[in-house]
Image (cartoon, rainbow, N blue to C red; front, side, top):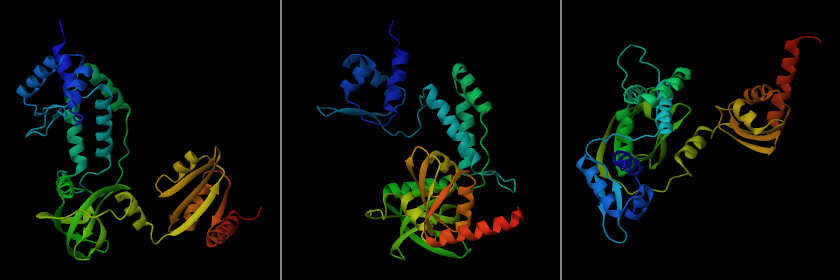
Length: 325
């Protein structure tokens, strides 16, 4: 007897990738005839899954967006990966210090984790519980970001719709802004919006946790070319614009340097299996010297000359602190 249920689940899992598939491709994947495929598609539609069809030589099948979210079909690895991702996301945003209910993205991740976990089949639940019991995600303090705000900005960016909001800068000064949103960027546990500021006629990045009263205006805009390769590249360039450029060669593998400087924006080039070059921008040369020294590897400062001089001064202070030999 053919496994109709298994075949239907496999068909649904394939369509949930969001891609378009020709009838020939789906028939080949499922090893069924075109007639059986059409019957299976009709069954999915009867269950409420909106499968769009384009007939003809260039025709295709695609799972369209419906009014409700259909049940997801995840394989074992996908389900475990989803639970781990939700656990990590839930740990990056702290609880409200005043004890009020959380409405940020971390709270949403916690709720989603619980819902997925309780519907896992017994076979998979044992595996997920084993992973969960061995997983500890250290809570990392991060500003709370509302999921509704992320959704509003994301929809406006996708739909090329202008947004207005109130914004508080790092000094606490408030201003009304009108922008064309392009990207939402997560960097160093902070969420940023890359947008074209209409009143300043220039690109700007905004900390999303400092945005309040955001409203989509309904006014459309024609997208402009991004000012960099990506939103992350533009944000990093802006954050490091006023810092000092430093280059050092370290007698250590690139992986070792990446661990030592994991929270620093830098380019690490592997010169050989045990030698690397670090190019970065820093507020403090002393900080970088200490971080490189703690790797336990020898290093040479290539530039700038001021970096080398600061290193000599720091070495003299450390030698003095150690006392006479």
